[in-house]
Length: 288
Image 1 (cartoon, rainbow, N blue to C red):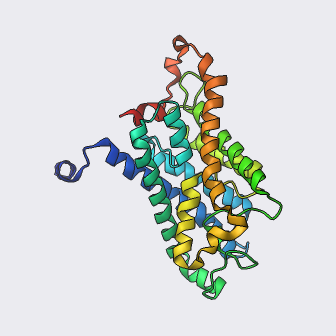
Image 2: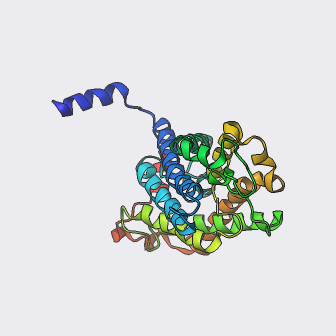
Image 3: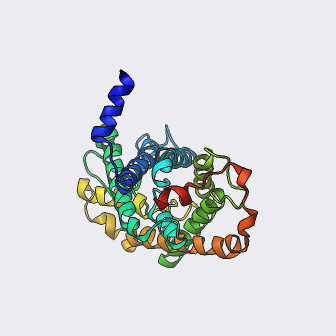
C-alpha cells in the first residue's frame, strides 16, 4: 500500500523534464556545500577559535563538497560550481543550453545556504557583533560567508591564485571521472572530489581562503549585502569581489584545456577500461 501511495505521488508531482530535475539537484547540492562549509567557518569565528580552527574549516568544506556531489551527482553530475559546468561545456559534456540553468541553480542554492547558516547562528552572531555587522577589523564576520584577501595579496596575485587553484580542481575532477584513465571506483567519486578540496585547502588557502567557485563566493556575498553588512562587502579589499568570480571561470577553462591536451587527447578510444566500474557522471548524466 505504501509503495502504491509513493507511485501515485510520483506520478502526480514528479518532474518529467530532466532540466528541472537537474536544476533542483544543483540547487540542493550547493545548499549543502554552503551549509557545511560556511557553517564550519561560522563555528570557528563565533566561538573565537574554541570550537574551530583552519583545519576544521578545511574538513567542513571537504565534507560539504563530498555530500553535495553525493546529493546531486546521480541527477545533474553534481557540478555545484559554475567553473566546473563551464569546463564541461568546453569539453562537450554539458550542452550549452543547460549552462545558464546550472549556473542559476548554483547561485540561488548558495544564497539559500547562506540564509540557513545565518538563521542557524543568528543568536551567536548577535552576541558576537552586538548587532553591528563588520566587513573588516577585529570583529569582522563577513568572512564567514565570502572570501576576502589577505593583506599581502595584490589583485594580480589574487587572480592568478584563483586560476591555478580552480584549474587544479577541474583537472583532478576530470581525472577522477575519466573512464579511459584509472578513475575512481563507482560510488567513490564524491569522496575523491572532496579530497581534492582538502588538498587545495591545506596547500592554497593562505592568500584568500580558496573560494574556487563563483557561486559559492558571490551568492553568499550578495546575501551579506542585503542581510546587514551593506555594500562594503563589494568594496572591501580594493573591490576584491570580482576576482573569486572571474578567476575560477578562467581556471575552469584552463584546467579543462590542460587535461584534454596533455591526457585525454592522447588516449585511444580502444583503450577504454570497460571493467574499471567507474561511471563518468560528468559525461553520462549531463548529456540528457
